Each structure stands twice: as structure tokens, then as C-alpha cells.
Length: 241
Length: 175
Image (cartoon, rainbow over all chains, first blue to last red; front, side, top):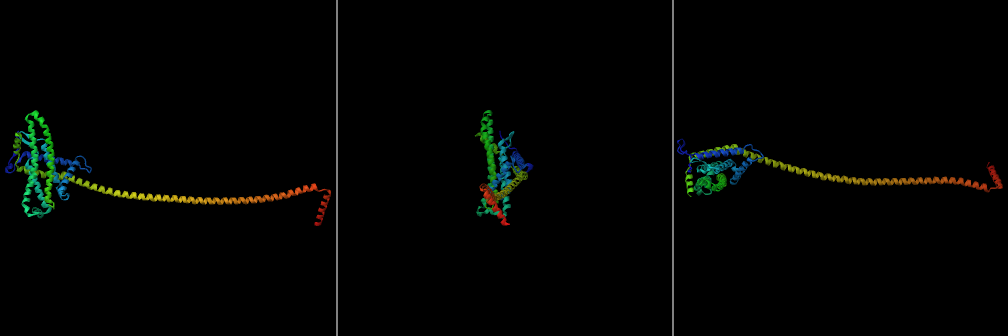
């Protein structure tokens, strides 16, 4: 039962252009799912919301609350679509691996895309880059640079290191949580396969428990990722930091 | 334990950073972001904002209506009060008028009674006078008759003669 990744290395002869095809597939799948869910939710909008629209508006209000807590609604209004997309995308990605794992032959195809450090670190890097971009855009280049040496110039190296640690911790936190969840899920599955009728029955309860916990964890991590994104952006955008 | 280490070794083989996946995930996330902004979050936020405005408007209108209603109620109250006062006044006037009328009617009745009484008394006096006159006339006649009767009975031939002669004499003297 060795699970391997479907690797595709050096596409078009470009040395760094490697693909883990399962990750590529899962990113695509969760993007499509998120797109379908959200477009369905935003269809036939009414003044008196019902059902799905209520749910979507609840999510919007939730992210509004996060932004309002971190940087205030007035400056943070532009980040609402980003926060919403992050939240829903990360949540759906986390859920994909909870429901089932798809193994074809010895190759692991279906998993959470967030169980790959490449994806989480890419998202984290994107978020940090965006925070710099908006820091310059909102406060101007001078104030942005001043942010690195305030309150004392002595802090400059730490501030620069902080940007990298922020990226790493943001990405690796999500990756670590989801990856650990997937490992335990696969271990429980393996345990079920050892002696088929007995261990299968015995592993149902831990499987259910861990899947439940996995959903909880996926939701929490999606929230934390969005929250921290907004915190990092607010550090760059707000005047009082 | 064997299981756990197996699992870690297997899963670790998935690790490592793939440049292609990085590009793909970032690009697909950005595309997703753009698409959702256009098709989902944009309309949702617009709708929510629209609803917010609508609700604010409604609240404003309701507030205005409430103030108007309050004013109208106050006006109605005042009008009611003044109407009640007027009614009170009218009733009092009517009572006063009734009392006045009563008095005037009583006076008129009194006057009429006095007048009637007076005329009745006058009538009575007149009738009495008339009666007395009539009685007097009657008494005179009666007394004459009685006297005649008495005289007829008492008078004798001699006297009769005397009387006649007197009478004749008297008549003669008068001539």
C-alpha cells in the first residue's frame, strides 16, 4: 500500500516546472467546486433572502466581521472578496480530503490540496505579497518604508525576517494541520485493511471521530488562515502599526 | 508503531515544493478570485448594500410616519377636548335658556292669572250691582203691590171717598 504522488517533472524542459499532478488536479477541483457553490449562492438574489442566499450572506457577514476586527471596515472594504475567496477555498479544500481519499493503483490522486505544502505556501506567499502591495498602495511608498524602521531603526532586520516567518508560519500551519489529518485518516484506513472483517468494524468509530474532528479542524484552519491574512494586511495598511 | 512510520515515510514522499504547482495554484486562485468577485461576491455585496439602504429608508419613513401619526393624534385629542368644551358650553347655555324661559313663562302665567282674576272680580261686581238694581226695582214694585193690597184691604168706603176726593182735589189743584 505505498502511496505515491503522480509526479510530472521538468515540463516543456523547464527545469523548475515540476508538477505534482494530484495537487494540480485537486486545486482545480476545489476551485471549480468553490466557483459552482458561490455562483449558485449568488443567483437570483432577493431583498428577502431565503435558504442558500442566507447562508452566503452569513459568510459575507462573517468575513466582514473579521475585517472589521482587524483593520476597520472602511480601509478593509477592498479586501472582502479576497478574504471571502480565501475562506471558502481553504475550507472546501480541507473538506475534500475529509470525505474520502482517492487512490488509483498505488497513486494518491484525491486528497486535500491544502495537504500539500506547495499550495499552502503559495497562498501564504501570495497573501504576504498582497499585503506589501496594498501597504504601498494605501499608505504610499514612504510610509510603507517607514513601517520597517518604526518605532526604532534597530528593528529593521527583525521586520524583514518577520515577513518570511509570517509566510512560513501561515503556510505551514495550514499544511501541517491538514497533512496530519490526512496521515491519520490513511493510517486508520490501513488499520481497517489489516484483518478485514474485524479491524474494519473496529476502525469505524475512530474513523468517524477523526473525520468529525477533521471537519472541525478544516473549518478552524480556514478561519485562522483568513484571520491571519487580514491581520498581516492590516499591519501594512493601517496607520497605527 | 510500524504503521505510523510507514505512513510518515509514504506521505513524506509527497512533500517538496513543485514550481509548477506553485504557479498553477496561485494562478488558479487569482482566476477564482476574479471570477467570484464578478459573479458571486460583487452581486452579493451589492444586494446587501441595497438592502441596507432600503432598510434605512424604511426606518426613516417609519419614523416620519410615527411622528406624523403622533401629531395627528395630538391634534385629534385637542379637537376632541375643544369639542367637549363646546358641548359643555352648549348644554350650559341651554340650561340657562331653559331657566330663563321657565321664569318668563311663570311670570306670564302669573300675570294672566292676575288679569283673569281681576276681570272676574269686576264682572262679579258688575253683576252684583246689576242684581242689586234689579232687586231694587223688584222691591219697589213689590212694595207698591203689597201696599196696594194692604191699602185695598184696610181702606173703607169712607176713606175711599175721602181718598178719591183728595185725589180729585189734588188733580184739580194741579190744573
